[in-house]
Image (cartoon, rainbow, N blue to C red; front, side):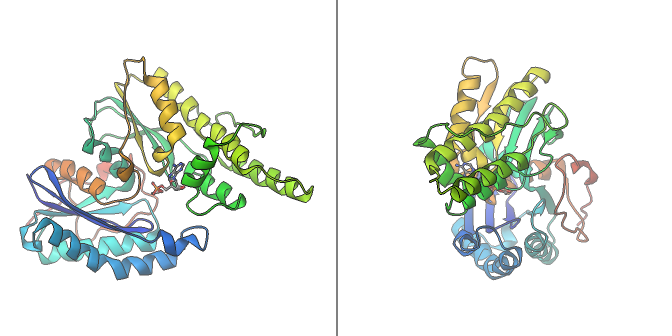
Length: 343
Ligand code: KG4
């Protein structure tokens, strides 16, 4: 089994992991959340600078924990996109430098493929499957006929669901990132506020979150102007019912239309307790298997990047040293890479 060092720096986590001998040998994550918290969202320029400061330390710690040196590695993998452009560049330049210095193949990994394959740490992927990819930057349904074959069948036409959670949390005076606090408040609340649930904006599996976000903001502002108190628990519950309801609705439609054996949750919002509960109920008496990632895999890390890289290494999907980042890389545009590595 190849020893692969993987780097992830697409947003506000600098992460390095090493896999080998069929195991995860180390996984280091330096999170910047406490820095971005005070701005209520990720500040891209600060995030890039912090990646520059953290990348060397993370590389060293990952090697130390795995008791390895760079010379023991067989490949370097890196998140090439999607993500924040400056942040992606830090990881990619580190990866290219290592690949060049140690004459190792460079493996380009899609960030969301990482979230999907993170599930292999807890179970087996069974194809054909449907991935429900719900994160801070993306919301999409991806059909996979076989391994590493991605087809986007539905996606958000405006905001991502996680982004919507973060904006709604902000207007309610809750900390960033907003997913966890809204999830907590919703547990104590009742669905008392009327919020519109958009019909599929384009195709039957597409999403739209900007209308829901604006409705919450307008409702909170108009209540405040009237001098009425906003019940945060009830607003969180009313919002969460609609936000998660949309994901459940599109998933139901997609499994009715595609011959899937399994549904796989992926991305930061897959940590949501209500989403997990609703998905479990939906598939409990069904022939379709449900795979939910462990909580540690719902946040950004490099172990998930290493998981995808293991498959790409076997398929000999390598990138040349001229590789650039792609902040808007689509998961179904993987085929542009082939065996480009030659020692
Ligand atoms: O996957 P991720 O790190 O984002 C991208 O890589 O794009 O996910 C971060 C997002 C944030 O928007 C955060 O608020 C949301 O995931 N999140 C949650 C929960 N935990 C994290 N959203 C809803 N409920 C949660 N429990």
